[in-house]
Length: 187
Image 1 (cartoon, rainbow, N blue to C red):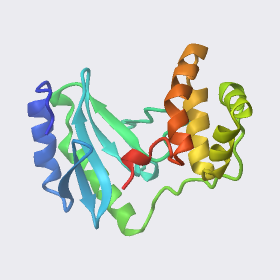
Image 2: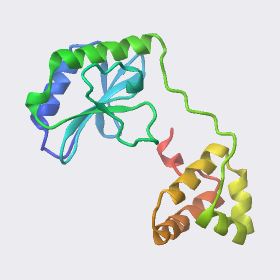
Image 3: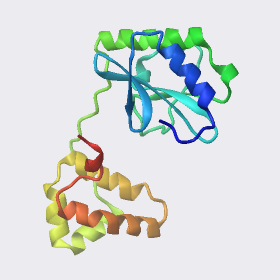
């Protein structure tokens, strides 16, 4: 499924190893994803500088080889990545052990549950825009707290004011339409 041919042999080897486990293969988000009992367990994909294995509930794995990273510290809660740079780094026994532990966690029902949002603090550029536009403020206040948080985070994560303003212009029609920032990606 991957267009870039940089990591073909490496991803093929990972697929061959993973097929020795009870996981079921599928394609989601354009990458190889393996599931157990209908739940995502791992995904594999190649990038420009590395290829990797994603454990969707990796936060629950012991990681005795210390191979995991959290790619977006403070943002990503459960997913853990195992990045590799060459075919020689693929350790079949370790990979299968990690997968077996992940499957066992699935059997036990271990899943990351998102924290409940009690309130959203709107500040800066978005707060100014809401106070200046009554219709926008009304539409924003009708959104669920999780959707409000998506928008607040999206604007506040931009460091430059110019980027915040560009993002604000992009999201105004979505807010007025009562849509969340990431609704297009949800089923």
